[in-house]
Amino acid sequence: MPAKIKITYKKSAIGYAQSQKDTIRNLGFKKLSQVVVRDDSPILRGMIHKVKHLVFVELIEE
Image (cartoon, rainbow, N blue to C red; front, side):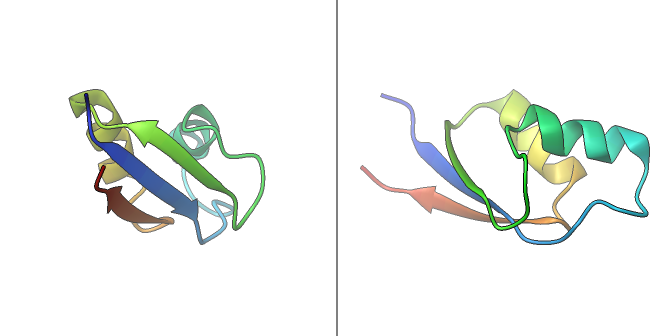
């Protein structure tokens, strides 16, 4: 069973590149302070790396 990652949208994407805004939207965020839980994968890690300055990430142990 894959590990889970809890991602919290902490900083607004206003003023950043459109590609970063698109990444935030594709991660599933619609508003600030929202939390999403996703299965860990290399693709997800790459998306998080692109917007690491806008989100807070926690690994959920099961």
